[in-house]
Length: 122
Length: 206
Image 1: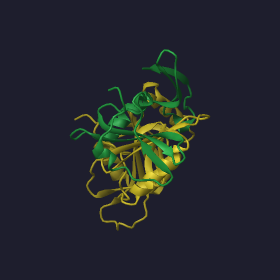
Image 2: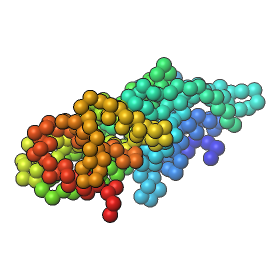
Image 3: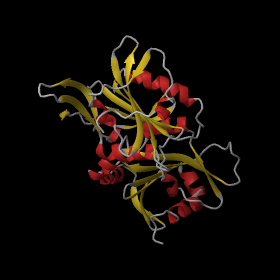
Image 4: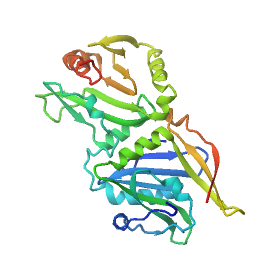
């Protein structure tokens, strides 16, 4: 999939929150990949403050058939960890550089890892 | 990354010390909700949760328990009571495994004829060690930590290896950790339950 997934049925369920607005991710966005949970129907949007500052993303997801979306999420993130996008910037070769920090589980948080990674995606 | 409480909900919080990047994920009404970005997104996640938490059943564990109920087998003469979600969340910081679990189920048990409002005396907590922690030998770390704690001795209950002191019984099987806690008098009173509990564990030979 080349652009962030959207689903009108899931979008309808997102409540309005005062002080924030949602908008679709731009066509060239690559950050949405870092929020993807494989195997689920997903609706992905950008969260901005009222004055236009992007603060993050929201994803609402459902499972196919009897698939539990939280079970799917747990199975993926607790075994693999999560890459948390920290910053992104376009590069001269038409790719996008995304800086991430890795979050993994650990004893009382004391083993939480911090590792900068650079991802390039078209 | 670990289960945590946010606005009365059970969420999977992913943060990194020293970084502004974070993510919160939870389930509500059969859907997965994920909010992430900068730490400023926490205000948005909390606001969304505010619209949902009020309609949650107090015992809705929001995916924390998974299938761990199979390790709380039906024992004739006794009834399991789940902790309400807010109490289960509040107990998290005290838990044996720190934040290194992907499923968590906690409650207490009472004799079948005890009044529902009877104060809990024997608590149980069941965990599945997080996959990435298990891969790094975390179960062994837990066993070493518990067995090196003053007062704990190895033992066996109905063929299940346990570590116990006067107030705790801990059993590890693969990625499952079972922790019973009570005062010594209660453990004596609930001896029949404890024996039957371990005898009926699904990892016992058929």
